[in-house]
Length: 118
Image 1 (tube, rainbow, N blue to C red):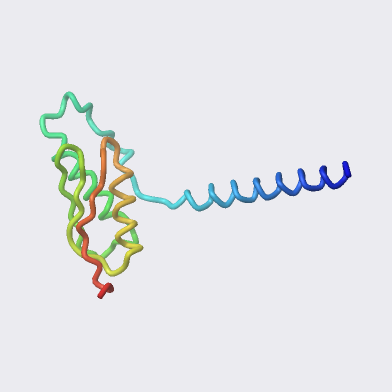
Image 2 (spheres, one colour):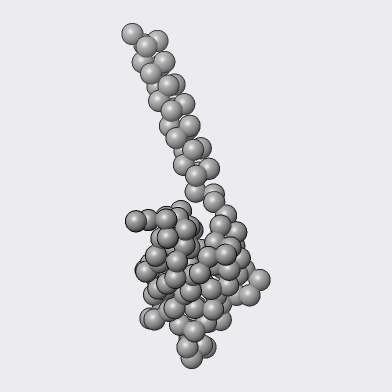
């Protein structure tokens, strides 16, 4: 009986470790960032939304899966709205993730049109 319990415990540890490794690997998709130019302190910037819009647009432009797509970013109260069109849902998700990667962005709303969707 003790051997069965030990075997079950070992199996649970292995399954848990495999899940953690898979979860960690899935979350490591790369999104370009603007680390070379840190965002100025918010209290020192008169129009944070202008800076955020520019930063998000820059990251989107550098995202390989969005090359050739028409995506623009606007910011109001640090909430980014994405407009334009993309070919696939995966590209919309990539644009949202890219916008979320910019420091000081509170939320991202997508108004992107997916061309391949009917």
